[in-house]
Length: 251
Ligand code: PEP
Image (tube, rainbow, N blue to C red; front, top):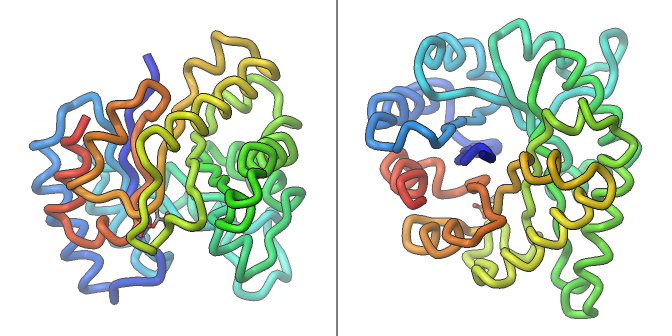
């Protein structure tokens, strides 16, 4: 059985006190979510120490929005996988479209980040997804295939088994424009087929593929009802505890 996962990417939002309040609210309301759904909150680095202490021993996991591709050293401004692991986080988002777009992250770099995250027992949540112009040109399947092939397929099967994928069409992120559940399903199915070809059906069927892009309480149930959608990576709606919890209850 694949894991059902709902992860909240807070991005560069909340001051520490606000983030701590939000984390406490999510933890206190997490009992309303069916036990088989994995809940993850992903705050800014600045709140990680405090929030990791709060989530410790609860059913809520914690992750970060990025990690460096290097182990340690003279990389001003970077945060290593070892530092993240030492604070008790279990997950790291890698390859979010905002990092690809604003920080020029390349597929080679993302592969290095995934590898270093795995070496430190962090679960990478690897994001892929096409831009509007690519979808309009009919290239969306090819774009996502390339993102998967370049940053995931060099991994061995035992490494791939620990990766979570998030399909996030760039045109749906923070825009209020959600992919239809059919659009999400056909891309998730496409990704799973690619995984089957590379790693075989047994492993491919164990990998959770999340949908991300303007997911909210009003549309989550429809999207999560699709057979290849195993949960969501939630941006804006994860900043409101009740909305985040309502989304996680939507399976
Ligand atoms: C995201 O940034 O991963 C995301 C899905 O954002 P939003 O839910 O706000 O579209």
